[in-house]
Image (cartoon, rainbow, N blue to C red; front, side, top):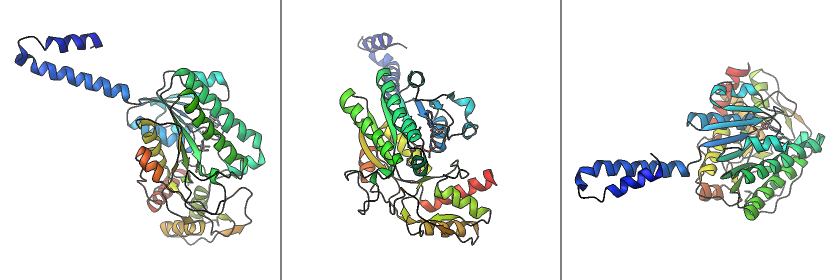
Length: 353
Ligand SMILES: NC(=O)c1ccc[n+]([C@@H]2O[C@H](COP(=O)([O-])OP(=O)(O)OC[C@H]3O[C@@H](n4cnc5c(N)ncnc54)[C@H](O)[C@@H]3O)[C@@H](O)[C@H]2O)c1
């Protein structure tokens, strides 16, 4: 039913036979309600970097909710196989978002962009800062510009806790002055600034989610740059000693990926966003030595780690204050560190051994 038919029906209700038309009137009101709901809801999503670890987890959740999902990924670090269970239900475009024409076609007809694409590694950025700048800063700029021009309603940006650097103050609050220590941290922070400016100057609704050490299914344990938890879990499952850089007393706010997925959806569906930056984490400090102990416990093993020198750009402690995310988008972590670790170990057992 189009809008003028809806209005005709509402007018018709003011004629004498009101009672006879009561059910019809409520039906029309119901249709109107559905139409308003549909207008406000974000249903058509672009997930940039959707073939990566976090992106593919987001896509699965969106598909399970019946949303339209488009993925654009150049498979630099992501794998199409991460999306194999939903590949028939999404639109997958293999392309490099550095190219403005790819970015423009990526955002066509999209309500909300969940921008995950990046080259996400501190050590990689020390080895090759130009590549990090390209895939983090230039790509974010291209996606923002295309989103602004296409009238996208909301852009949610994957920020990083690395922005805080090694300042001793804990927990990290968004109002603290950023102190990036690596090209990766600087590049991710630049993306946040651009998101805020695109809201202030062009009115594009953006929000940056500063993720703290995300882990979970589909995180790649194989590369030399692998994140800590997947590398530790797969080593211990194979009875090989995991390598810890430093003394193992460094701590992180390890965050199971479902919590990050939830934060993205809350941010996309929040009533309004205005270029804010919020921490996304569990708000719990866990040392690397404790992670090794927990993996040994959950797997019934007792594999001792090897300790190697610290790597440049690594920070000593990281812990988030998540009050702002709760207030702004209603975020509360649903999966604890221990539960997340158990789910991850199950996944690595089934998929990688
Ligand atoms: N994993 C974490 O702990 C963590 C922590 C903080 C922030 N982040 C951020 O979250 C996002 C996702 O990280 P992830 O861990 O899933 O990494 P990932 O490497 O698994 O995913 C990144 C994806 O982006 C794609 N990509 C890179 N450059 C691209 C380009 N030019 N065009 C199109 N696609 C491109 C890659 O192929 C990959 O699929 C990143 O922005 C990262 O900076 C991650």
